[in-house]
Image: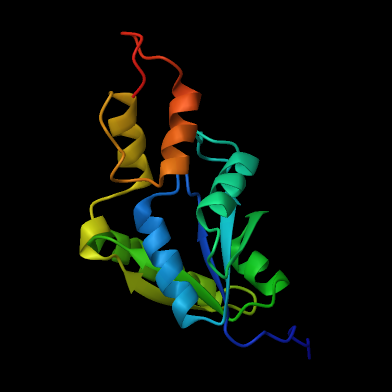
Amino acid sequence: MVKKPRQERFLAVYPGSFDPVTNGHLDIIRRAAAACPRLIVAVVANPNKRPLFTLPERVALLRDVCKGLDVEVDSFEGLLVDYVRRRRASLIIKGLRIVSDFEYEFSMALLNRRLRGGVDTMFLPASLEYAYISSSSVREVFSLGGNIADFVPPAVLRAMRRRAGPTRTGKRR
């Protein structure tokens, strides 16, 4: 019989690409941190995506915007369930914005429970004021010159402006 590593009660992991971290992400982080005695916000290195920010930049931005919150910010590569097991966590936190999020995340939750020792997932619905915000929509609006100040924390907006440099008209977004 293979002995499973002991899980730490109530250590939860909130994973994501956080490219960029949005106010919706922060809302989920605050609410999860209030519900869980220990929370790790884990930035995933997804080799299938071309991120705006590097993995170390995303970790640094999350640490900056999570100051004052009782959370740990970390990063990982590979399978989420392997990371969760290495950290001896007992729960995955996932935020849900829209119905299609649920369909995808529910199937991933079942898969994560089934894989090598598995782990349960808890879903937190997005607050209404953030339900329409996604990292990809923020990146798209920003790339087209739109104002994203209401969608991301100020530190993230500054980092995006630095990354983009002057616009074609010489003005900064």
